Length: 241
Image 1: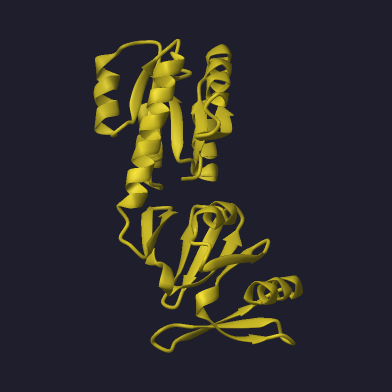
Image 2 (image 1 turned 120 degrees about the vertical axis):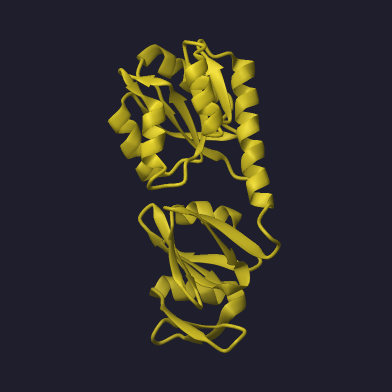
């Protein structure tokens, strides 16, 4: 499984740096993409990066981080959450349980407890992936998850940090980068042909070298056409042999 993309939210500098240093020792499992010191910075970063895992301080400069999660879940599927706090507060512990938080760590955070919490998050992520039916793929979207049969996908196009998954029936915007998708798509079916395009090799029906177009054919006879760059067409021809 690929690394968990994580954001650290901690409004105090020294605890934030301490947690980042400890997470560096877990870099084989976690990739920290941002560290935030305020409610608003955290909200914007989470909406931008769509992390898999969130290390979240209970109190952010006097504001309640439970409120932040309540606000975010109106727009996106919440990441796995590991709460961090200097206080063993039953009220917040109950809120964490209701939000299905992965864990609740007391500061100063123990390295062993942190490693165990990260392992628990990785296990949850793995279980979620394995729960997807055979032959289908699960993608994160703004409002949840999309499950699509791999055989239905014609191609995928980058859209900034997001991607459009184009099937023979629909086009869905997913909150994952093309690089992230490339790392977990079946290599025997999907290949990246340029900086912004992944194609399903098994659905290619016709190539036009002069116009740089690729036509895909579904099992029930539907076709889709994709315009490629010159280098994209050359890369695709190389993959096809």
